[in-house]
Length: 112
Image 1: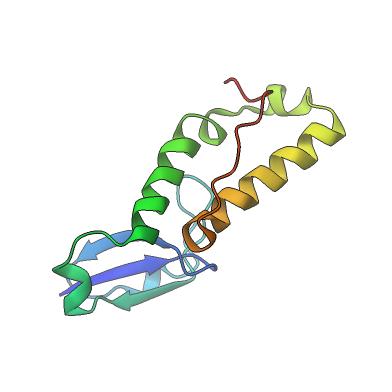
Image 2 (image 1 turned 90 degrees about the horizontal axis):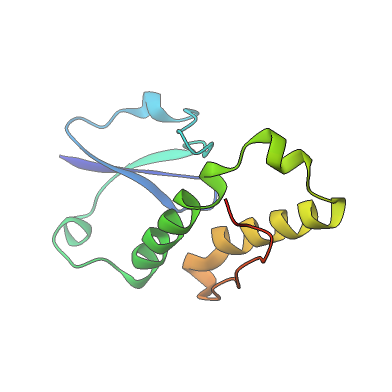
C-alpha cells in the first residue's frame, strides 16, 4: 500500500509505502511544513509520470533548499521591514506556484 502526506494547501510533502499512518497529521517536517492530511494513493498516482504540479513542487523544493532553508536568524534580522515583507510574499508565491504556474522572480537580496 502507498500513501501520501499533504500540507494545508494540498501540496504533497511526502510519499510513503506500507500501512497508512495517520499519526503523521500535525507533524512538523524539517522545512517547517506541517502535515495536514494523509491519504492512500490512487493506482493512477503510483503508476504514472509526475504531474505538472508535482514537477513544480520539486522545482520549489530545490529553490527553497538553496535559499529559505539556509537562512539564519542573524541574516533575517538584518533585513529591512520591506525586505521581510518581500521575502514573505516571495515565499507565498512559491507555495502557490504548483497550482498557479506563476514562477516567482528571484529576490536580489537573497544570496545565502
